[in-house]
Length: 269
Image 1 (cartoon, rainbow, N blue to C red):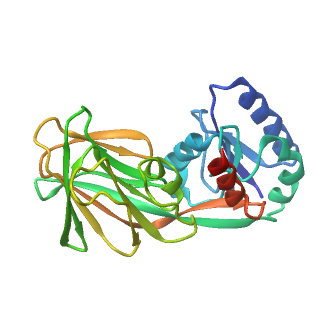
Image 2: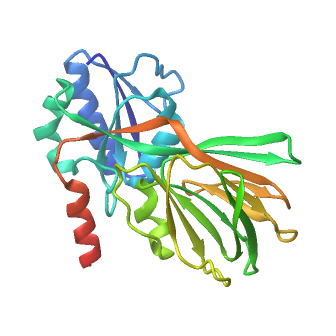
């Protein structure tokens, strides 16, 4: 391993201190190291990205560097850590083997989102590791029309709609009544938010299907939120196209069944 990038939650002093300790170890082994906040950082030929923070930091790291398609080794400084491989106290045990390339990769499904306005203009193209949410910005009904592979499937009226990856099935979708889906599956979970019509249940689709959500709001305009970040307001008849991306998220794993141990702990709590 010759080059490692570091992405961290820079708001926490303990993470900043931790990152400097790890960087010293890496440089002591002649491994080039860059930090995301350095204006001169060069990401070319990066072998691994070390992410220090909670799941939100992992999502941000993927948003900024996911297209590099390199493994992410995530250390949990958050509450749950579904996207992380280890806890901070485990770093001395696992870092040497990671640097020797002795780890497994878990590939996660990513969805690609594009927004088409006035039938032809693509105003946004992005990726989501967790979910894309279309919701009303005010306590008023949000209306969407869902097409699956070009065929009208359902009309939703309520607070909005969530389209989640299996990775994101334990996030907002779960809170809205969606199913928990094994993160290694290739699927898209569609979960309405407080729908008042007959389509009130969550639905799990094979990720090979192509979805279109047509915004039918006139006022107020709905919000488009991707992995927790607000991207734009949607106008009436904007089309949000959602499909499985060719891109995959590559997460380093060193502990067998860590995900299910965390899930069991959360459900028990």
